[in-house]
Length: 241
Image 1 (spheres, rainbow, N blue to C red):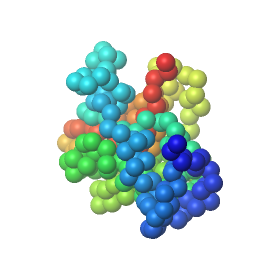
Image 2: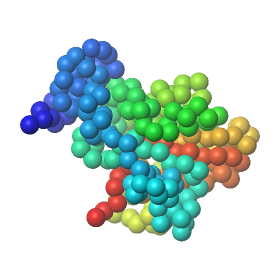
Image 3: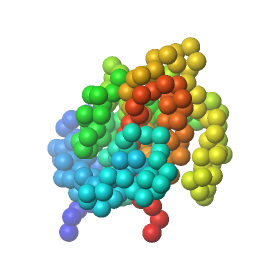
C-alpha cells in the first residue's frame, strides 16, 4: 500500500518547504523535494485540457463545448493539476494559514505542466490576480503574487491589475451569477494602462473554479489593449458529476 499521509502533520513547516533536503509533504519520502517527483507524477499527471477554460477534455479535443459556444476572453488557459487530494489541503495552508513557503514548490509544479514554460517565455507581462485590500490584510500576502514572482520575477507586475472592491461569496452561484457578481471588480491602473497595449499578458492564480474571476480580469485587460491573454493556474476544479 502506498504510504500516503494527510498533509496536516506538516502544516507548521510551511515556511521551511523551500529548503532542501526536505521531506515530501505527501508521501513523507526523505530526503526529497517538498513535493517529490513521484507524487507529482501520480497526482499531477499531464491531462488533455480545454484551451479556453482548462477543464479536462478527451484527447484530440482542443476546446470544450461551452468554450466553443461562448468563447472566453482568453487565448489560452493552462492548469498544473486537478483540485483534488492532496492539493486542496496544501493550497489551503498556502492561502489561509500563512504558509508562504509553499510558493516555491507550487511554482515548480506549475513549470512542470505542459506549455506553461513557453507561455511564460512568450509573455511580455505577468500579472497576479489581485486581492481586495481586506483579504490582503487578512492573509498577509497575495498567494497569486507569490507564485507569479517565482515563475517570472523580471516580468511580474503586481500593481497594474487592481481589485477595486470586495465581492460577496461566490460559492453556490452559477457561472453567469458569478460573472454578474464580479462586474466592475477589476481595473487597470489608469496611469500605466498604456503598458498593456499590444502586449502578451500572462495571468496567474492559484485555483480556478468557474473561471468567472479570471474571465472578468481578462476582459478588463482586453479592453485596455492587451493583444494576447493566457491564464496559468495551479489547480482547476472538475465540473460536478
